[in-house]
Amino acid sequence: MLIASFQILLSINLAAFSILSYNYLISQKEVVFQSYYNQEQVENINRIEQINNALFPILEDISFDPEFRIYRYTDTLNCPIEMNQNECHVETCNLRNVEGEDSIMTVDLKYMGEKYTGQQGQSIWLNIYEELGKNSTSEMHNHFINLIKGLHSSISVSITEQFDYGNKTGANVDFFFWRVGDYPDRIYNLYFLESFLIQASKFLQINQIELPHLTQLKVQGLLSSYNLMPLYKFDYFQNLTKKDLEQYKNDIKLLDSYMDCVHCKRCKVNGKLQIHGLETSIELLFHDDKGAYFEKNDVTAFLNTFQKISSSVKSIESMFERRKQTQYHYFKLSGFGFLFLLFLSQVVVLLKR
Image 1 (cartoon, rainbow, N blue to C red):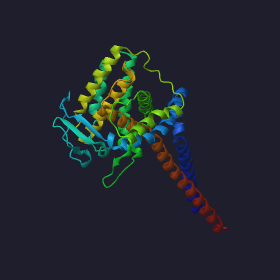
Image 2 (image 1 turned 90 degrees about the vertical axis):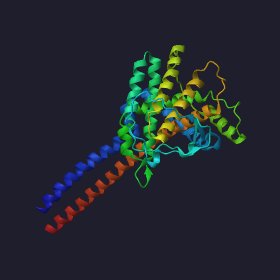
Image 3 (image 1 turned 30 degrees about the horizontal axis):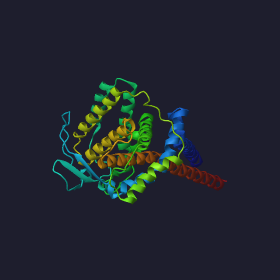
Image 4 (image 1 turned 180 degrees about the horizontal axis):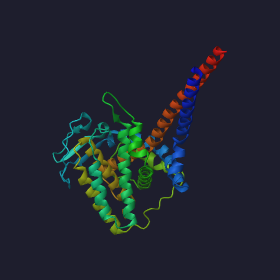
């Protein structure tokens, strides 16, 4: 009877071991992406990741620079929909203002990292997509919507990296896959936005902005780094018309107004910052005068948005690696359990003899 019980336990453990080993194999990012995308898309992602690995430390260094930490925005009440959500009183919703003009809010971005606050913004995003869908009249506009979706994905990735557990903040892998990782389009839109910002950043000029020499060198380091990177073809907007560009600008205004519907102040500012950064990237890439002047606040919004998107792309790799390590941990435990049960069963057999 005892031997039969061990055999049943061994069979169950072996089945669990087989399932866990399979889950470990298919949890690897490369395997998942091969199932999500075609070969051309996988190659595009690999190139973007290669470029991003070089850009990320430069962008992070720039985002820490005091010259690009202070951001100014107008806090308006132009929400186009009625919201029943109460004001957020969670500590992580709060922001730290610095002194400025009454009509202009000024924040130090050092204290504005995106975190999970528990505020539900899904209804706002649904309204945004519904409004953008009404205006979708061309393939070019669909590309723009994918940029917005990439921004949405990045925000979701950021809050899963900085999840509030009450007494600590850390990565929430399950939440990441629930929000982004299990959706191929959400991941790809993030890479699409990253590639768009990469192209736009090549036209960034800071000659007319008064900056310390060291800060100038940091930005120049970003721009010169492209000379050492692999060529990357980005031709999605070749057929862009003036009508499309005008529609983009109107949509940017619409997006900014929807940020006024957000009751979490930290979330609102991060949203406005990144929409401003996207607006600046559109101006950089599509302005008739590639040497057009941009104010320091525009450059601050662009560089910090670029850093946030770059960080989210890095987090994709980290989240898949964390899940793989968890699967590997369970896989090892199951293997040790199987060997232990096998050993005990052999001991019982020997004792029976």
